[in-house]
Picture 1 (tube, each protein chain N blue to C red):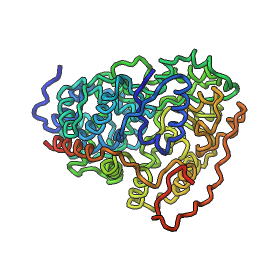
Picture 2 (cartoon, each protein chain N blue to C red):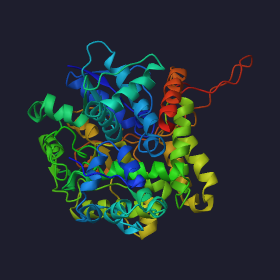
Picture 3 (cartoon, rainbow over the protein chains, first blue to last red):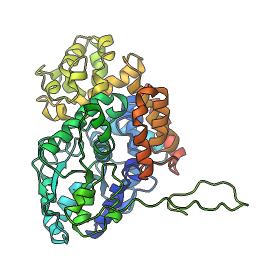
Picture 4 (cartoon, rainbow over the protein chains, first blue to last red):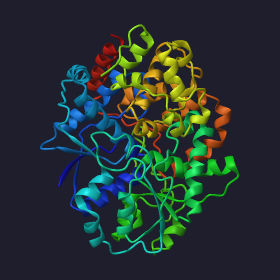
Length: 322
Length: 186
């Protein structure tokens, strides 16, 4: 099956391992992801804070570009915040014709147009669970995640708000639980599975965010989880990168690796940890992965500095070069 | 479907600028929103109280409350509201009004949003390194010293770029956003 793919800004850098593993796993299941040509930022939670019309137009450009790609009806976003913004704009443009008219007026300034409702906006987790199916996933497992205790962490925007009644419980979903069970993992009944990670509060009111992160880590630790599994780059960043800040703030000693569900699928399918971007998490997943016989890749030794051609201009090096 | 909201220009403004905002006038004052809010304890006013204040036309008090700025947009209140009030979207509307009228109680959150969208309007993509440096060097830099190692971790794990990514259609995007901004003030 073919899908439009909207990676979103996080997946280009801070959540690059999510992008790598999402593509690897999709490929293994025969899902063809066609990246939306020249997509722009979805505005996160910030643009709508300042300017509503521009926030809708910003997302509208992505919808228009995606819909203009050949025969594309399903647009897949792996990032829960992008997923929300894309589907919310599509939903509200459908529900409020005046809003659609104005958004299209703005889009026309760039020669674009979007007919609301012409795309089905989907989260990558839903695509794997609904289109591939947990049975088909289980059939491909070669390295079951046996003995690994995982906390399925959905966060907010994957399941809320409910638009067009997508049928999943907005407070107690179970589809990621079932998927992880299909991979052979021991899934804990994580009580805080849909609680908030604090979002952008780490930046503007750290104390608020740290308390929300602490609760999530504490609960996962109480249930003796080895890994927290997420489907959102913001959740991953807050729980992983800010874990040491939280430990300092509360004098706690959490050590809980936070991985993407796509990395868990890839591991169970026998893919190499490096091909799934493992090893780039801040809280090491080495002890957890050792339980399933996988090793976290050693950090690459710093590449020797490339000698500069004496005649050339001092150009910045591109990633992966030299 | 809706009760008349005439006579309260503030309420009318909030409703008009929020998709689905008409439901606001049906608020039962049950408090489910505040009870579901993960950052409620940091708010001067719970959403329930804010809604009553909007109903009473208390523009100044509502727009200078810190409550909308502590909304983490988790949408718990919204899926639980018995009257389907789009609570989170109303919080966004209140933030926009507070920014327009410069009534917010603390510059940090509006500045963060403004810095974020500044990079989006320049490059078409968000730029984490630029955002973090610009914002944190101008907002309580001493409080942020402890976060320094985090940035180094992100850089060493190749999870942060020192250079922004720029979309090809940036001129097209700016034309679209400029047009939209004219609509917003209209």
